Each structure stands twice: as structure tokens, then as C-alpha cells.
Length: 525
Image 1 (tube, rainbow, N blue to C red):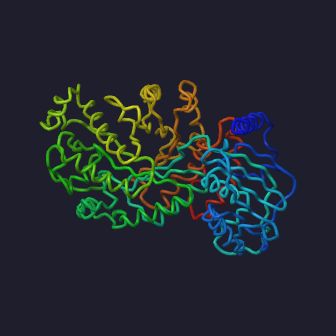
Image 2: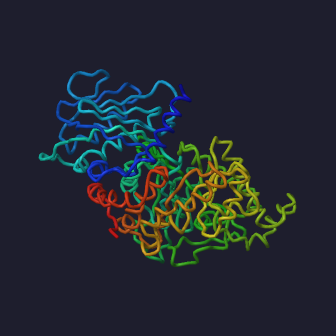
Image 3: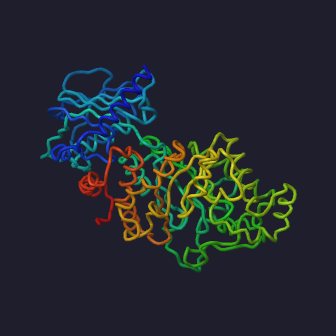
């Protein structure tokens, strides 16, 4: 049965990729981003009324309640949730009993005049099916108050859908500018709406430590605050308490989004030395300063030769592992000058003791020590592409961000490492639209294709990055990220054969109204 379903799904993808583009009439109805893999348009419509009910078993009660809550404000209907059909038309959520080619996140949706049926192998697939359903309704379904003059009709369709890549992410920089819980929840909602499943939280950097660690209270008492000489607005600094993190994790999990914590090391750590200076090579106490009030890259980094450094990192990572149930922990690893390591007696002792060739190999040794501890916690390590310098373990995942690093990227995948593509050329959303247009983001396929041709199956996914040193207001942040995030959502989800810019662009225009109703600012190029 498994092989037969795989054959059917593959055949559907092949047939769909060979079909003519959807007609203008169908395009007007199917305005979904990211575009589903297989769409078959049927005759008729389904209309949600006050008599519509939701059917789901106990395993999907959370998703059923969420669907009800999504549909209720604008429609004015509080749809009953039943385990059995009690009459009227129906929206049914159902888990498949056997393995299917839909995988962990795929779903199938069939809409007839009497019934909407969403099936999946896992609850996350149901979540993505629900998001497609929301997009098929008139856009007014996103309003937060009842709308009287809209017929809540859906086109009758069959959709067979699953993601191209496992990792479809957005990184938000919380260090250079701190963003509060409500703003983060808004982004989690937006990620879920467009089927993006990772929020990478850049929680530590030279401009501030943004997560409570019980064992090291000075990280939040000192390292989370800008030095008062800089007169920074209070809203740009601060941190998430342990309970804040738990709240965000719960909120994200319910929406199919995994929170990925990043704790920077060995570089971008001067905020730590404002609180615990003994962890650097020099022992100097430093201040926490805004990005443009100091060097972008500091020579002061964690001392790789002090046992206190690794004791600190293990204690921090232990608490982070407890708070975040994520499969991965990101350890940074980027932009770490090794100038002080060259003269530090502690670092030079380690180089000699372990017969390391140079400071690059010392960083590789440093990363391997940390990776061993992360693995002991049942987690996997991700780092920026600098972790490839000096050698790399085959189990680490590499986030490639630097342009011109194609050789290192290909070397990593040839070694067996999984990679996440987030190049500055296409995915740095703090860059201006003149530099990275929405259409430029869509062209990330050229890089994907090169890797897939040489080493298929080694791309874990794609990610957009937003660094918060320039745009430090919520509207400014929104305009940098949107609508480019919708573009990357389609690149990460939809197979290349099933999409092209000329089909995407009209759908993007349609979604500007959705962004308005989601209270998201955006740039209309």
C-alpha cells in the first residue's frame, strides 16, 4: 500500500507539472501561497453557514478548536465540534491510519458542496491544511469583527500537498533590538499562515543577552541592558523570562512552528563579558553598546582554553535545552576573530595539547566540544558557515549565509552535512528592496538547483534573516520582511516544476489585502 500511494502521489506531481497553467477564472479562486503541489478544480461551491459543524476525533481536538477560533470572529458563527456528524454541511479533520507519502507535514483536502475533508498523517499536516482552507475563504475571513455581507463560500477542489523542504524558516535578531511577546506572536501567526515552520531566535549577541538563565543572573541584570551612556530607549532592551519562553513555545507549537534558539559562540559575545569578564582571554569588563556605537565585529571572544568557558556554556545550554523542545540548537559560530587566541596562553596550551594546526582548528575543536554536549541533551547542532573552517563533524548542520562560499557549501554536502540556504544575495531581508527584490528572492532556485544537481537530498531547507540594527521599529521591520517572506515561503514549500514567477506575482498582489487584515505592514514594489 505504501509503494502504491507513493506511485500515485508521484504520478499526480508529474501530470500536474505537464498541465497547462490554471485558467484566469481558476486563478481567481485559488489564491493560495505557497502554491499547493496538486490542485484539481471540481464543480460547485461549499458554503459555511451557522449550521455547519466541525468533526474531529480526540487526537485533533486542539486543531479543531483552533479552526473554530479562526473562523468565528468574521463569520459570527461558533461552529460546534463533534466526534460524529450531526447534520448540515461539515468540515472534517481526520488522521490517516496508515503511513502515507504525505509525510510529517503533508495533507489532502477535498471540498464538495456538502463537505470539507482534510486528512493528514500527522497533526502538523492538518494545521497546514487548515491554513490552506483559510486562504480559500473570502479574505474577509481574517477580520476580527463580524462581517454581514459576505457569503462564506469555498471553491470545490481536491488538493494534494506536502512541502518540498523540511526547514522553512525566518530568523529574527532579538539582540540588537528586543522585540516583545505580542510582536513575536504576530510573526508566529504569519509564519503559520504561510506554512513556514521555523522561527530562529537570535537571542544573544554583542548588543544584548535576551533570555533568562537562572544560574547566571547577571546575564539579564547587566548583559541585557545597554550602557546608560548611550541613552537607548528602554523598549529596545530587555529579555524573555523563562515563563515567557514557555508561553511562546506553547503558542508556536499549536501553530506548527518550531522555535530554534541561538546562543552565539565563540564570537559576538562581548555582552557576556559585561557580566562575566573572566570568560574572555583578557578578562576585561566590557560594556553593552548599540550596534553603531562600536565595532561590528569584536576581537574579544570566548576563551577556548579555559575550563570555565565550557562550564558556563554547558550550564547555559542545559537550561536552553530544557526550555526549547526543538530538535536543533543554533550556536552561531560566525565572525569570530582569533587575534587574541594567537597570544592567549590558555588557547595556545589547547592547540599544543591536542596537536591542532592553528586557531582555525581550535575553533573547530571548540565547536566539537559544544556539539558533544548538545548531542548529550538529545539535540542537533546548527551553525553559520564559518563552522566549516578548520574542519567540521559530519553531523552538524550548516547555515550558509556568505556569498562566494559555494565551494565550502559543496564540500560540506559532499562530506554528508545537511545545509540550510540563507545567502545574503537572496535571503537577508534587512537589505533594501533595490538590492533584493521580491523577484530576486524567487530566483533562489538557481542556487538550489546547483546543489541538488550535484548532491541531491542535502538541502534541509531555506531561511530568511532579519538583523535589527537598522530598522528598529515594528512597522519598519514588517516592511523589510513582507512581502518577501511570502516569496520564500513558496520557494521552500512548492516544487520548482509547479511554480513560476508569472503565476506567483498575481497571487502576491491578492495577498496584500491579507497582510492588511493580519495587521502587517509591507512594501508594495
